[in-house]
Length: 213
Image (tube, rainbow, N blue to C red; front, side, top):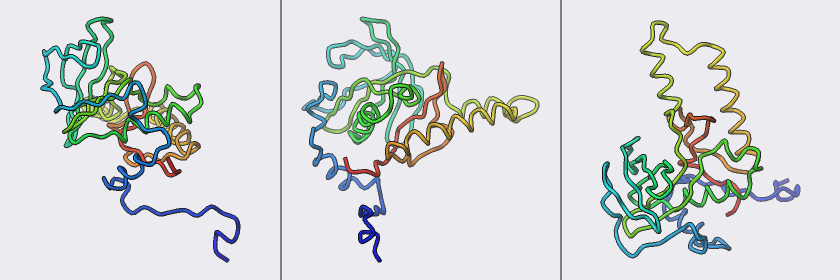
């Protein structure tokens, strides 16, 4: 007997969850489009020049770009300071644009219990340009789990103490469990996607919704 005959919901297997056409198709079918959200802003121009020591206008605010925190193939992450509030934040410049990351953030807000929302990074706003996107989000100022591992490599023992390894393992399993409970699978779990600060956070950079949008 087929699973459908047993009353189970049909599951569509996806060979490449990063397929751009698939992601665009899913986003186009949202009952509430991203553009209807007040913190998702579209611009009819290209991503402005962004570099350390520059002051840029992003929406209604003025931001001073402090430094580069990290750089990958498709994104550069800066630390920035809001000149009106002195709040420090991350400024993630993506080329090409990645509105899916903002969508995932909105789903975390909607699906997670408030008591565990702090375990995952939070995007304050997204700016979509013709050739890329810029995300403004919460800053975690103690680096990543990978930074912590590399720090211990420079010490005499060269290994993280076992109690700390157990603690991080429990935290990671707990965070992954919270995602699975709301039908989200993280497709890029690795040490540099775990942010360290006053509270450990799983960077939801590349995650795949298993349920329908």
